[in-house]
Length: 335
Image (tube, rainbow, N blue to C red; front, side, top):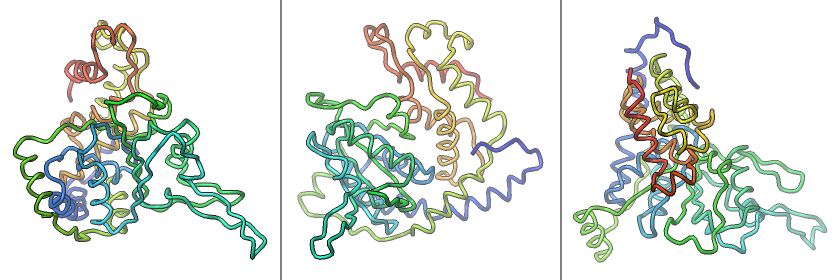
């Protein structure tokens, strides 16, 4: 994923290729903006997850168009969409599928679950018990599902967008840190601005939602994923990413001794892989064939906010993982 530094890399050729391959991105964003008002950050993060072959955990209060966003993206790229509403009585079979006995055939047949789609919305993932969460997370990681003694490969592309409501914690099953780490990005979305909400209100009252046209295909997305890996990342940028990651583990080595007592654990190697990948995807969305430090800074919060554990001391002082990331990004030397 992270390329070795090669001084003879032809940046111009890569740039031209990326500009050509990323032509559909602007069309895709325009198409989504016909239905989704504002929420530019969420739309871009969805595209980063899609292009980076990752999954997204979205946190936001109800009614912020989370379902609408992923459904619109699925329509715009002609992908299959399914939504799973997570509840305390859900079973793993309700997500992945099960074996059903067929009396006529005197045999078992396989009934596939809603996970068999290109875009899966796992709504309020923290409402379901651990068994169901682990069934979904295993599918996300392995990209295959075993029902009975048959193993099925999941569709490509395969993107899970899980949501959790930060307000209501009663009757929820919080995701363990090790499982949250499987999400490439954790994106926190906020309320729209007043003029945006006025437009949302008007559209809903007038039934003024535009039809979503297919402006890209799944083949284009798969090609774009390969092109993203070709985005050039200089050794200095690799070092910058590693410095940020290592500062979450050993803050005292980066003149951040005051963070030592606030961090219970730092980002895992999955954090550095995903930060590098998300930076490449961000450069691709910006139609650029090389990564610059601003790309890393643009995605660092979404990649790391769920990968840094904070101590009781930090909680007592109302210090969040966001504050820690801000301090690290401000201190680590930019190439």
